[in-house]
Image (tube, rainbow, N blue to C red; front, side, top):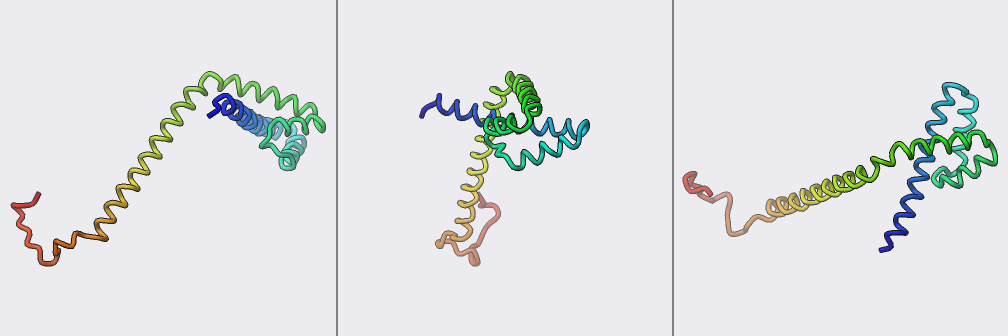
Length: 138
């Protein structure tokens, strides 16, 4: 396991996600102040692959440098705002998600066991003829 490569890949994915969030923010701002530019950016974002944030920005710089710089500024602001809380939030979110997955799997495993007993009861006990004395129940 190459942790350094995993960290690089994670950072690249996070950068692309922050680019996406910055684009959404800029579109929302432009909807209020300059609807035609908001529409243009929305259409551009529909054509270009925003999943790769850096390629998206390179394409945007070729067409609308002003919007590309604005998105860079917003992306940087978002990254600064979340940088302090992200490591702990990531750890706790992964721990909680793992715990939930384990809980659900344990429930599924337990349910299968209960269902199996119901479907395949002990053949040594004849439920219809069993004489159960309430004082001798376990």
